[in-house]
Picture 1 (tube, one colour):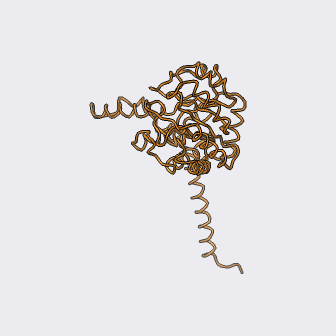
Picture 2 (tube, rainbow, N blue to C red):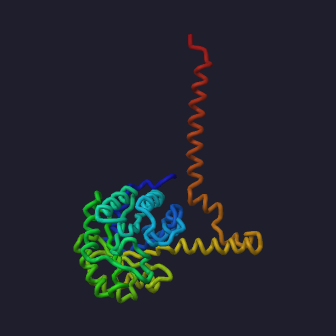
Length: 313
């Protein structure tokens, strides 16, 4: 009931241990706290918190318009709803190295198990759009060093994301990846890889876990978990998929209302009330409320009885 009973430091330690085991970790993107609980119930190993989703949820494009406090607040809402470790998109760290350091501590306080900082210019663009620009290597490395120095829990995963592949090519991406790892990055997120061989090349170049972004309608093909595992990928995210599915269903429902004035033909497409109540543990809240009510009522009856009963002779 209420929130996860697993402390953040335990989630981080478990995340690290799972990565160290070599197991591939699947992390669908949660578009709200309840979807994070659904991801957990379906047996996934982690939850991803996408900056693009947070922007879209606010009706904004993913061009660096969200703030550090908005990201930290949404992260806290999601992490406390699931026992799974959460990895969050921290964009460019929301400013200069000192801002990066503050962002890391804010997100650590929010309960995330890991975060990634990217090497785009600030403000950034969606990683699968044209026209991206990246910072010079020195600036990129300072961001990662600041992030590593700022964390208080050594198990908080600091992941470096590089977008340089789309700007300068694969060789530049591999060089940047090596430098980011040397600067202290615990894991690597090479954005917008063209094919499996590019993931494999990055994997061979570094000795830290590598993430693959399987976002739809982007620069990368949509490879299967098995394909990515075979080339050594350690983490797979589907950052916007659940939001896209939900918004697609919402649009079809609204079209149905416009066309026919009723949603009755679409009942089978909806989550049933019983399933929703089960997911939010409605019975657990009800049982808790009954216990409190009955306990309070009993105490009140005992108090009233003591006031009215005659004293013993």
